[in-house]
Image (cartoon, rainbow, N blue to C red):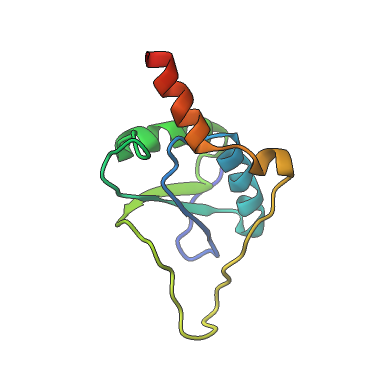
Amino acid sequence: MHKWDNKKPTAMMLGRWQPWHKGHQELFKKTLERTGQVIIMIRDMTNSKDNPFHVEQVKKNINEALIDYVGQYKIIVVPNITNICYGRTVGYKIEEIVLPLEIQAISATKIRNSFIHKKS
């Protein structure tokens, strides 16, 4: 079993996760390879058509999906971060992880819309 260590290098994922899906899961796995632990930040946003899930439901969905990674991630709720700014090289990277095209093609919007159509 892995034990979280705040002093250990940690990768960060920031998003709405509306909903957490296979693409997010694959991104998590690749991100985890970078440092061995990941902080997942959920943007605290007003519920809407594009953000139908409350943060507690998002946390639950992520925890269920990452059951095999206990101790390798933490989830925190953060303000609605829209800009990540830095002034100079300060010891961390901002890095795009390019996933296979079939994973990149997964759309949370399409997934949300499928929930809406199922309810109708």
